[in-house]
Amino acid sequence: MEKAIDRQRVLLDHLRPSSPSHHNFESTLSASACLAGDSTAYQRTSAFGDDVVIVAAYRTPLCKSKGGSFKDTHADDLLAPVLKALIEKTNVDPREVGDIVVGSVLAPGSQRASECRMAAFYAGFPETVPIRTVNRQCSSGLQAVADVVASIKAGFYEIGIGAGLESMTINPMAWDGDVNPKVKDFQKAQDCLLPMGVTSENVAHCFGVTRQEQDQVDSHRKAAAATASGRFKDEIIPVPTKIVDPKTGDEKPIVISVDDGIRPNTTLIELGKLKPLFKKDGTTTAGNSSQVSDGAGAVLLMKRSVAMHKGLPILGVFRTFTAVGVDPAIMGVGPAVAIPAAVKAAGLALEDIDLFEINEAFASQFVYCRKKLELDSQKINVNGGAMAIGHPLGATGARCVATLLHEMKRRGRDCRFGVVSMCIGTGMGAAAVFERGDGCDELCNGRKVESNNLLSNY
Image 1: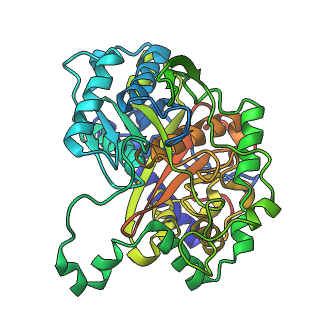
Image 2: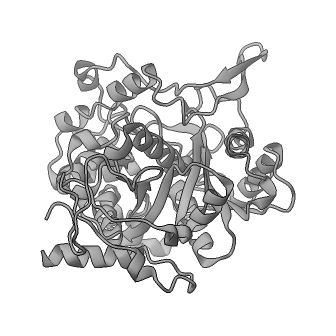
Image 3: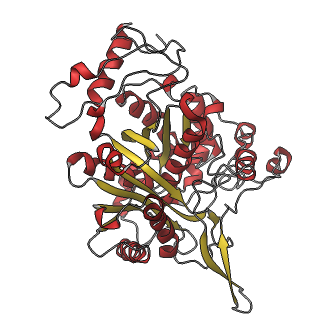
């Protein structure tokens, strides 16, 4: 019981508004026990106006790099449609946006910054709206969202956009220039240069993740089912573009509306025939690794009070974000460290989380993190992950936020808390906790009781 009370105290302190005008906050917020036992229960009042909420989250389809549907699409033409959709679908005046932050990894910094600025103009934003990029490797899209949240909480502005963009067709993974010879004197620094596939093999070897376990991650089946049933339609913005015939140079206009890397007929027998890519007797193959992809995503955030004033539906509430450092040689373990830290910061326990979007950089690290945290496989990547949908590095975080929040909305009041997490090249991990938006106060599986110090599950 003491642990439950401590967790509640952390949660209530975390949710306390920063505004000094709410002097009666203690009397307007009280806890109640959820007798269903599977959701943290507390009452909300208008004192929560300082919450940072998500009112819209969209992504492009994700397409295979080089030979996919976006092989002839400029990077700025990927970002512009999702930025435009945020404004058009919410009717928010673009002049009110305080900043746009875009996660991007592979493109040269100054060029990508200019492309993002150009994309904002294509999308209808005025010159008065600034934009910048951020690069924390594979978590860049999530970092962009977290940066916007921090700026809103700091009072820099009330409305912002966190986004992500990557064209791995245009900007493949490569090292530009010489490597500092000093790196040989620092093992951890040297491990930062390891190919990601080698770190996957390291995780499999160190923690006993078998080839069979990796091949059994059924990402393609789940993603194919989600596509067939239309579960991605609410998050995907169709992108008008072109395909150029490499032989004739002829251009054909097309509209891309679905992810093109999903293989619905993938079988364990076929996966078992694939050869290891990074180690002769290894277990990491093209079939149990994330796809190299092109795509973009964007998330519109604002203070809850602003969203309520505008009459906008709230898709989700941003609760906490954590980035951690881990051994670069086994960088894939990052989510196993970041997720507990983020969940604890939210005043929750892992069992309180209803859905997880964990980036499937490699099946080895995905399986390890799932086993290490003892997570229910029925809660993780329920619509497939990066092995099927794709992993455009800078865009993945924003993509995962959109996928998570739309699935939480679909599941309704029984689905309250969700987590987005990923490992990060050079040895890091990131995770963020979200709460479902509209209606989360009136849980259908819980009822209030006259008590102030109880949390569910205790």
